[in-house]
Length: 163
Image (cartoon, rainbow, N blue to C red; front, side, top):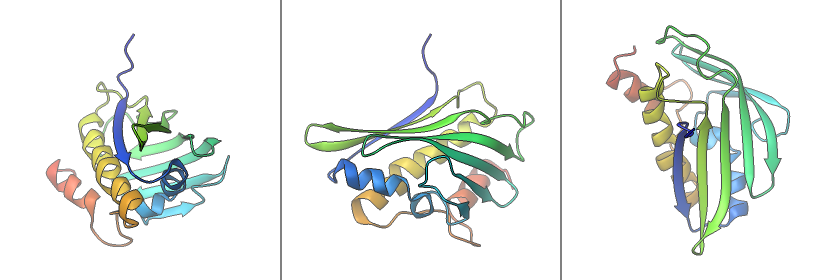
């Protein structure tokens, strides 16, 4: 059976160690509205965007400069009927070297096209990984959702008529 989970890949000139360290900084590329540690094994953190998306994740695997895995332990979207979407899915970052570059493969394992949120989540993850995380790794400045302001999520919510 094919794995239909969401995937995004970026290639950067920075070292695997630099990419690894940067990925762990969720506030630098996903959102400044995060409470808790994003870089400590078995610790949990909470992400939210208004009342549209609330999510609690736990860092469950950490292989220095190679792999990072987060488990979604709680999640709620206010725009889908099935409130269990994302729960027990995993955010997986695999870091490898390819042709003199560092390759970061992001997989949201369990985020599949059958989910009601898939199209919105596909757009969101594409933007966060291919734009914000890429920029944070390559320039030192990502484009996370700013604290107490509208940002990428607001644009996405407007696009999908979620607010």
